[in-house]
Image 1 (cartoon, one colour):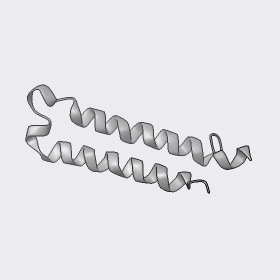
Image 2 (cartoon, one colour):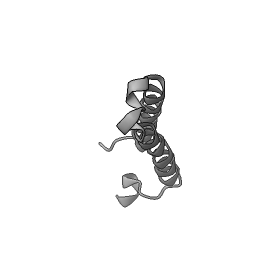
Image 3 (cartoon, helix red, strand yellow):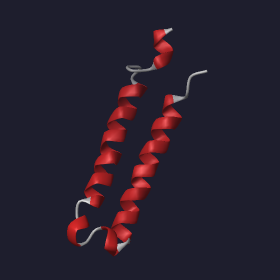
Length: 66
């Protein structure tokens, strides 16, 4: 049984979105030496959406290999 790539990608993007909001809402997580934390989480959202789009087009889908 192969995993549903749509669900896996959506959960990953959602997790990065939650991390972005958490980093922005908790001042200790984005001040001082941790200024880059929200940017890293935001990059996770962007890259996750790009990967999701790639999989939705049918490229990289393991079901096509069988």
